[in-house]
Amino acid sequence: MKAMILRQICRVERKQTPLELVDLPIPVPGENEILIRVSACGVCHTELDEIEGRTPPPRLPVVLGHQVVGRVEKAGARAKKLKAGDRIGVGWIYSACGKCKFCRKGNENLCGDFKATGRDADGGYAQYMTVPEDFAYPIPAIFSDSEAAPLLCAGAIGYRSLRLAHLEDGQNLGMTGFGASAHLVLKMARHQFPRSKIFVFARSEREQEFARELGAAWAGDPAEESPEKLDCIIDTTPAWKPVVEALKNLEAGGRLVINAIRKENVDQGALSQIDYPRHLWLEKEIKSVANVARRDVREFLELAAIIPIKPEVQEFPLEGANQALVELKERKIRGAKVLRIG
Image (cartoon, rainbow, N blue to C red; front, side, top):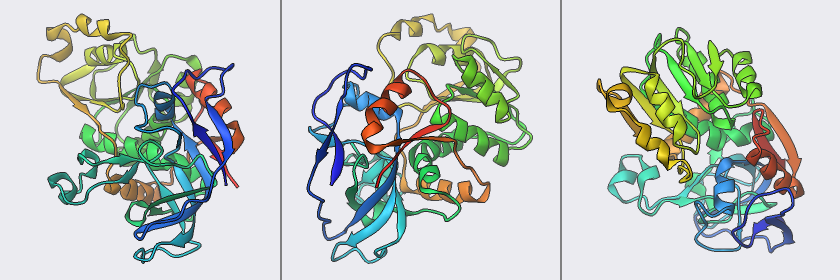
């Protein structure tokens, strides 16, 4: 099979080709696993973090990709729920122990044995991959393969972030950063909270314009003050400065939800600018988001089909993965980038 593999940690630049197109054997599913013929795989900012060593894979080489859509090709001896031909998706959560206190409560995202697709196990930048059957999800018929792919991570993690924000209809929602996840959250929030106004903070004028097109009441730079105080803010940036800027716009008793797998060290000095009375006093809260649980993926796919939420996508061939990653790093973003495979 064809696959794009990461052999070593390196920088993502136009003159570099961090991923290499190779031929690999088709993987064999274990007893509780299924073999998937991949048709589409979303390209996520987390892949930049993996390649550049901020969240490095535990082993190399590895096949990246954790927003995977395809069809079941074969099932292991004990995999009985899915059959050949079923269209399914795989997200960031590849597996968990199933026994710990977190797994028993449906919070597999906090499991100490949490394994991530495309990091701890080979992912979807390939023609085939395997996954435990319990961590694959039926894809609603309303979505094409390319439309479904970003929903499996950007959408699911956005859904979890919005749940953790505890927004009530009529309250103001702020969003800092406006990439693949944020534009889906905006669509979701407009459906679930029709009386709420949404305020978007984004660095580029193109992203601000896109947010207004999708229904944002206001869009501006992260350093600006919003025209109204915000009851909840969801931060999807990899930096600390937007967090500090967001806190000044938060209403008393409001909640800031940080949806990021890591924060860069280069602007840690921004934290020293936190002024307690202005930024944190009056019972403001900060909540982090860690991965996704299976419930998030299942519920979001169902909700996205009802609304419906159809992400804007830009397609690339499998061998165009390096180009897609460079454009993602350079913030040439409108919606989500997806590899079309097979």
